[in-house]
Image 1 (cartoon, chains in turn brown, cyan):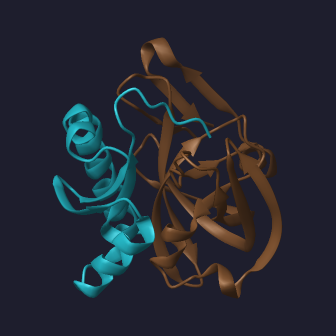
Image 2 (spheres, each protein chain N blue to C red):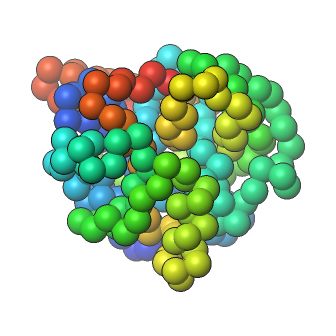
Image 3 (spheres, helix red, strand yellow):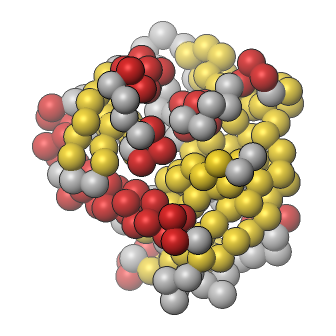
Length: 141
Length: 79
């Protein structure tokens, strides 16, 4: 199995587009793939598209991200659908998806509200990441 | 699974549109969130919650819309 990744214009950031099945609802999300993060989460504005609000979720922990305090709420088990190199859907279960809510931002700091696919996702599913930025080639396998 | 594939493809088109027009978008919407469906910008705002609420009030199908932050020129987002 290979799940191709997308690069940004400068080739120094990698993305993957996924549909998440939450309580029977489909939510497409553009994730930044970040091996520097040990958490996988979606922003609250993404969750709100399918009427999932942080006020109804359990607060798991808070993290500091570059001048912004982010609260992470437990969303729990979801199915994440990726498109593989054959153009077919690859459904992968994930037990630790979280919803991120900006608690506060230091004055002058911009909160970009991104979805992050972190190491916890790769670890739980025993997946690996291959990236060759100079060739703009990357995939999850 | 057909619907999932269609949504992934739609988001890919929206993402490609942002990538290909990034410099122009930085000029027009610095430090704003833009709402994109395919090759069309539907709306923009500095606050993503307000943007989402406005799109909902307009009756837009929210799950088909990619909302992305456009940093001003020279601003690098670290996360």
